[in-house]
Amino acid sequence: MKGLEGNEFSQLAHFLQCTPVPQFVIGLDHRILFWNRACELYTGLAARDMVGTDQHWRPFYPDKRPILVDFVADGDYEGFLAHYKDSQPRVSDIVADAWEIIEYYPDLRGRARYMNCLAAPMYNASGRRVGAIATAREVSAQERAALDLQREAEQLRQENSSLRETIADRYRFGKLIGRSPCMQELYERIVKAAASHSPVVICGESGTGKELVARAIHRHSSRRHGKFVPVNCSSMAEDFFERGFVGCSQGAPRAGEDRACTLEQADGGTLFLDEVGDLPLAQQAKLLRVLDGLGLAPLGGGGARHPDLRVMAASSRNLDQMIANGALRPDVYFRLNVLPISVPPLRERMEDLCLLVDDFLANWTGGGKGRFLPSLVFERLEAHDWPGNVRELHNVLQRYLTIGRLELPAAPAPEITVSADCGVAVPGLGESFDYQSAMAAFEKELVAKLLACHHWRKGQTAAAMRVSRKTLFRKMKALGLADLP
Image (cartoon, rainbow, N blue to C red):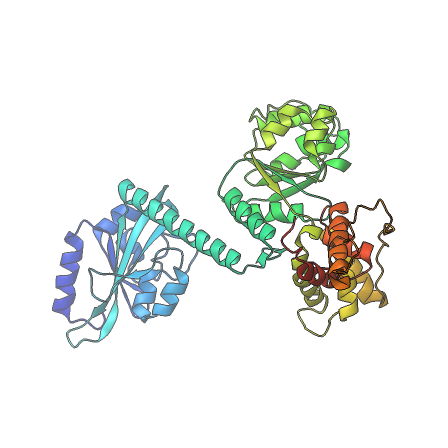
């Protein structure tokens, strides 16, 4: 061995040949200097064919690449960590200056194996590095089980830490934005749903972001490596359900079309049924078989398919009312409604309006801060009730930034009349009559009745009074109405 005296090499070769552990030695030029008998038996590669070559990668990989012993020979610790970042790279606590990994090899002499690989530098009598020695040992089933548990625990710890950090931002979860109490509660529901495999039903008005909620659950679940497949049930024709959703087999009419059906695409991932209540009853019965795990028999035969998927559904309609009207099968609803999630409308979280506007403007300007809304424009946004929710807000803002004019649908304002039967009591006139107190009492009761008339929706009440939401909030605070109802 270059760099070693003849006596040193003979002693080393004798020792390595006697050990039952597969071991080999390479020089600083990365060519094999010694390949012991155990290495021959374990890899099926003879020493006469390996010594003098740089093919020590052959037992482990189908093509040439650096392996652990190469990094040790070069003393490249950073390269070692980067290359084996997923193989638990570490410094050995048994052999001095040695590095080790646990690597999975799918085809190591005909079968899959987990190997504990260790490599250490070799020095001559004068202390100069002359090469590296590699040792390989198959990991036992018991050790693998312990490693799997350790890996799963670490993965869960990282996922929980990531989720906690996301929620700790307090104003964003994926593409959902808001720091209001109802949005914080929504984030918590998403985290809990992501940790489960059960079906989810997401209810909320149109434009609230139900699909964003479903995508957030999928992205943080164990199925995140599978596909998220959205299906719009309100526009699904019966022909598509049979061919595109369930799929065809050879021999069926147009059997060559739509082979990769929706169920196959969602296999291993998440199937999202948007507006599930709009699915016709006949198709709901077939969907029920999927929810029950019975699979679906495609057109043309070929046996039932049993896709491994998680189902999430969404609806902007009242599903309980649809059941009462006979438009939705109760058994489908009860299979889906395991984890219900409600997405709040924008009017119930108007404190998030500023965040939503800022996010939209940042996206509009590519992350810049050159855009802002004049205070009068923002006050008009605050006074609007937003029946189209966040989608309507984005449309209004885009229209405003494009044409330079804010266009909002006019909210009907009820007439405010003060008459004898208006129910607003006026303090009796007398010597002790206080005009200011009487007007304050009158205003307080009038504002309270307007709020009650609009179900305490501040946007609608402010529009009826023709004032901004900020003005209404200040007035409510001054009149002692802030804590009602």
